[in-house]
Length: 94
Image 1 (cartoon, rainbow, N blue to C red):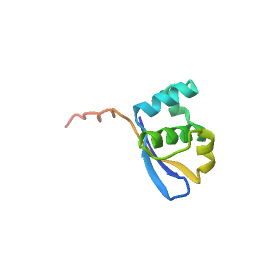
Image 2 (image 1 turned 90 degrees about the vertical axis):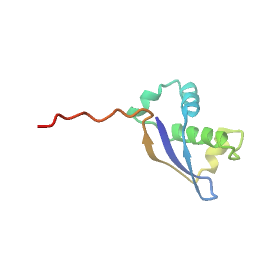
Image 3 (image 1 turned 90 degrees about the horizontal axis):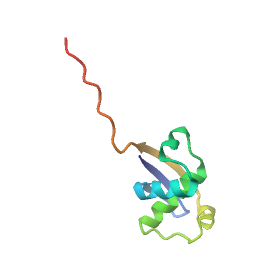
């Protein structure tokens, strides 16, 4: 699963996309499985993923996650996509 995030740290919005590494880091920190996201995730979860996306994208962030959170002006999930979408059903023709 990839999440498309929009983050504003006061310098205007930037678009971020999670990857496998970010999801695994989230699983390790919060002791949850990626499949749990279907039941909903909180703002701390989204902020953590944005923080890790920034670090992976060489975007300058503070070493402290809490300091990063203090800088957030706006943060939202724009969209999500599954890694391996299932193909549509084949319908029989009459």
